Length: 424
Image (tube, rainbow, N blue to C red; front, side):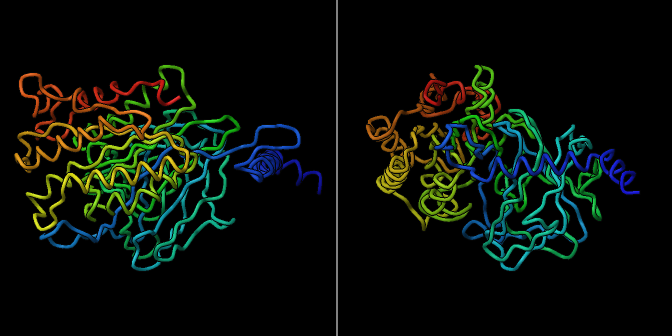
């Protein structure tokens, strides 16, 4: 009887799973340090996907408060593209802006197969301290236990979360540019979720990061900014934001261990909250706090300028204040050993909040960036994107139509403007 039972368990792969999990636990036990005794490489985590977080309750000045998504006996399946591959991964869940606890009753991760589909052979449970569910207090975040799931660079994964009771989720990355699928009931292991358009969104909910584990060293480039980093107007589900297209170039150049993660928030400003926490307040968490961060590309400030004349004229910001914010961020990043690259602010003549006074501020900020000697380099996005026939406006072939945000080709031009040798 005992031998028969053991054979049955072995056939189901139980023993192999236990041994693999044990090996992973041993490998990750010393995560983050080198083995000084024998020189053996240790497994380390690096950020492979990130979503900069906002509070869905908030709204722009003069507008009504936002309405967060409420889940009730629903599953949400969220798809993201990884930058760095690895032998295992972990997921960071968040209730950073919660007013009340949230409970994720069940969660799973799998490789994504088109739209809402998953490869069932790769479907894995996410556990937290060995438990299949987790309750996050307001302001709390947590990592899942390590998951044995080998992944490749630029591979899509899907994370499915089930919320059993009414759950308000205000912690979001609002502009996902990637479809999320809602399904009724616990659908975390379903091979697909046939969600009608009304049950689809383009945001990420309660997710902060996916990190992959490997013994191979890696660089992690954190792109920090507003909607132009976030990818506003880029094609949905196509990974055409400028950080994505930079990542494509790195991998095509044979640099699989140089990763790019996106910490852009649409509408973001240096000095004032909404949209998202101010750049000054979130820089420590969403650049310095990114696991394995080695480089950062900073492109932020055009909304500080534009909002001064539209949307929030009572929150006028000077060029000197923007420059001071940039200088502070640069100093912090350099003190932590990161290589820092500043991007010049893109031309925006013709945009809804353009003004001559704002243009003067943009020119002053860009002049300071170009003259900066504290940073490791300057990415002159302005020079690449401006119209030769009107240097204050964006090139028509790169314009999404609003004179402010690039289209896919424009984001590609931005990515192409970044010398890859700076990121090695």
